[in-house]
Length: 83
Image (cartoon, rainbow, N blue to C red; front, side, top):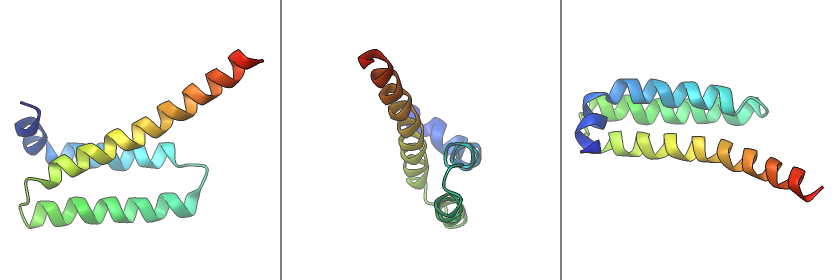
């Protein structure tokens, strides 16, 4: 059920991934630039070559970026509780 939605809104999920990466990787500009180029290339090649399975990869990368932010937040809360 999720897969048809991913394929249908492929471009929007790609733009969302680029936006999330832009805001979550502000502390390391060089890494952010490399990731934006990489994610953009994956999205464009998947779109131009009509690979529907790239929508799943884009969604997975989006989940990883958001998971990284959640992990940082949880570690910060854990450190506060230990004090």
